[in-house]
Structures are given as C-alpha cells and as structure tokens.
Image 1 (tube, rainbow, N blue to C red):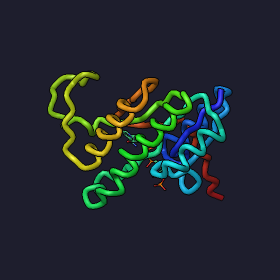
Image 2: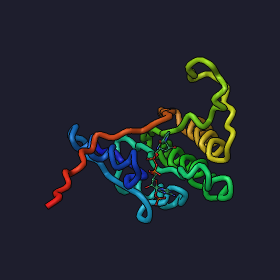
Image 3: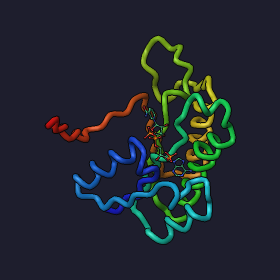
Length: 163
Ligand SMILES: NC(=O)c1ccc[n+]([C@@H]2O[C@H](COP(=O)([O-])OP(=O)(O)OC[C@H]3O[C@@H](n4cnc5c(N)ncnc54)[C@H](OP(=O)(O)O)[C@@H]3O)[C@@H](O)[C@H]2O)c1
C-alpha cells in the first residue's frame, strides 16, 4: 500500500514515515518545496503521477501566535491546502486522512468533547483549521478528520558521548 504523507518533515509527518516504514507500508514523503499543498496544480500532478492508495495530510501552518498576524498564509495552508488535496483525492478516488486540532473548540466545555459538539475557534489558527475541515468534508466523501490536542513520538534519542 502506497501512502503519500504531506508535511513529511514536520513533527507528525516525520513520525508517520518511521511508523509507516516499520509497518511495511510504502511511504511517499512530501513537503516544501517539492510539494506545496497550496498549489492546486502541483497537488493534482503528484496524485496523478504517484497514484497513492491513501493520502495523509500532516502539512499545516502551526505557529499559533504568528497566525494572528499572518492570516493569509495560515488560511492558505490550513484551509486552501486541504481543499486542494480533497479536490484532487476526489478526482482520483483516493481516500484522505486529514489532521485537525482541539483549537477548533473554545475549551469551555467541562466534559470531554465529542465529534458532534459545535465548534467555536478563538484564534486565527483555530479558524483556519476549522475551515480546512469544512473544505475536506464538502469536497471528498472518503475522508477521516482526526482532531488531536497533542502529538508525541517514539523516536529514540542517540546517547551523548561525553568523552
Ligand atoms: N504539534 C502539536 O502539538 C499538535 C497538536 C494538535 C494538532 N496538531 C496538528 O497536527 C498536524 C501536524 O502538526 P505538526 O506539529 O507535525 O506540524 P509541524 O511540525 O509544523 O509540521 C508541518 C509541516 O508542514 C509543512 N508545511 C507548511 N506549509 C506547507 C505547505 N504549503 N505545503 C506543504 N507542506 C507545508 C511544514 O514545513 P515548514 O516547517 O517549512 O513550514 C512542516 O514540515 C497539524 O495539522 C496540526 O494542526 C498538532
């Protein structure tokens, strides 16, 4: 099974490459500059050329504070990028796993959030991620949106030689 992982140089993308390869999947890594998910033509070209069985979108604009002043870039990567991926996936009938965040909620609920809870992002980052979810939902039937609040990895640090 060939899996295209976008944002493959990021925290999650990097870990997905390790875990995917360990599990025996053929992982096709893609990140800037070779695949810019805000570039519709590039996205279509990659899917057409490599014909993956699945796309996992780990690419994102993740600087929560800077997003407040870099609206255009945050929305381009977190809304338009997933829209381009979902559109191309629909064209080539490829399922998409899209990663989202708890930032789509306002955090005021006193019990665990469930999928059907109303969203209310308080930041530009959260709003851009919420709109990215909407784009995926409206463009592609075969998708999964995973909302997570934390990421962790299993990569082992190399021991440091002191002498
Ligand atoms: N980290 C967390 O604690 C956390 C918590 C909840 C949810 N999430 C979600 O998990 C997902 C992955 O987060 P992460 O922490 O792994 O993010 P990350 O480390 O910032 O990685 C994102 C990757 O996407 C790349 N990228 C940025 N713009 C791109 C574009 N236009 N086209 C293609 N690639 C692009 C980045 O490249 P540059 O570095 O060059 O910009 C980076 O390599 C995101 O959807 C995020 O919202 C993360």
